[in-house]
Length: 71
Image 1: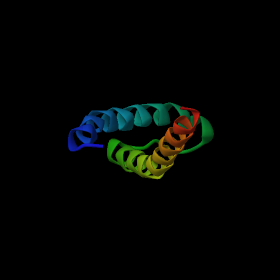
Image 2: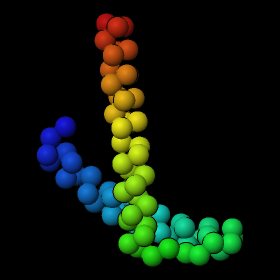
Image 3: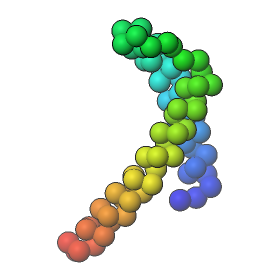
């Protein structure tokens, strides 16, 4: 993965944070929780991204190894 590939994820991060904040604002009152602001949404999003990224990388590596066995 190159440097520019990582940079292409930056707009997706901000958009994901914004969408998360909007959806949380709709869901939170229904379950009795307070809504969150954009910086908190960014913190939650980066936490989720950091937790999911190693899992996604492992899945891609695993799928690549299986693909090599079929050839």
